[in-house]
Image (cartoon, rainbow, N blue to C red; front, side):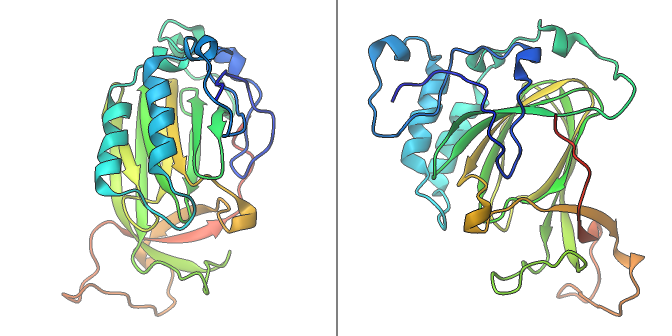
Length: 271
């Protein structure tokens, strides 16, 4: 497999931006190629060891749609990601993008590039200016590893109290009960976060306190044709809707942090 970096202009379910050169992403790391090609020594020398190790491990860990990595494999990927540095993907805190601490006026656009993608997994970088938001969204049938490489970010995440079945997907106007999994601020370097198809905060939102760079490993990647389209949500207080619905715990009381999520269409948030 020859791996060299390019900015992928193709629009995927999670749109891929074309402006990553603005933050200095090195066009020398990886390029999407057919999986049957072998690694040659000349290209291998250009790829940082940590990134090469991550790629090779993902090839072994992710088995395709309908599967979840085994606990030992999750630990293996987390160990690699925990020790990854910005320089492993061609970034540096000295780049002008990351030195701009104050947000400019107007909506802040998120830019992203796909480092590598196949049917089993994808490696993506997201760049968020200060105050930029990746809205509350889900990862249907996916296991996702997120590594904050640079910056400070607030992460809020939820899981469904009763996950919808494949036969009964969430309708746009339907409101479902969700429980809060995470509501915390992280500053790089920090440990990798992991979410699973039905646990770990599968529905999450990123808000950048300072300019941020995030490396995401998604297995399998978004694919609308396979039922893994990205949906966006808005959270409401539990008692915001008087629909008579009573979803209680075994003890008979609503837990703190329970919210109602409604699927919604949002304005474009990515550049």
